[in-house]
Image 1 (cartoon, rainbow, N blue to C red):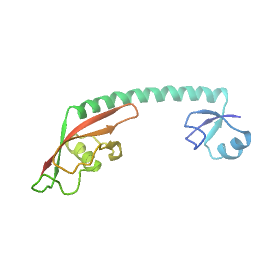
Image 2 (cartoon, rainbow, N blue to C red):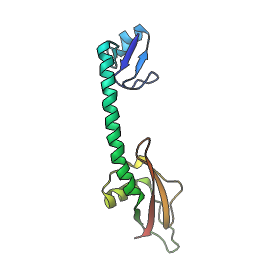
Image 3 (tube, one colour):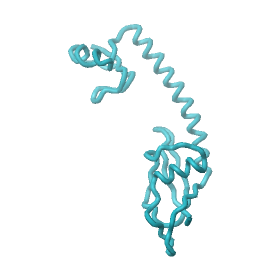
Image 4 (cartoon, rainbow, N blue to C red):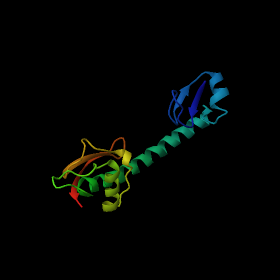
Length: 148
């Protein structure tokens, strides 16, 4: 039996995907829980329209993200940290601190989980962080750790 998934189902497929399942699985699990609909001519047309709209939304999102990517690429963030006389900071710079610095300095909200640090930042100096804005859009951001 062919069904169109309304939402992601583990080990079966993603939302708006056409999958073939056994009739009992569809009748007893997927359909009563509202996870899928039976494939008909009308549901195929709805699926095509949803995919077209999703493509347009994705295109607009990528345009917005490219402007954010340009802003991040062309700036150097300044992160203040308490440090000793040798230039070693107390603690280390975290992804949360970088996310906050972007929010304060550029008014762009970025989830800290999308920021990765290639190395442990525990000294004053200039470093680079990698930010995954989208599956297709990533940017490296320079930041400088300065003494407060």
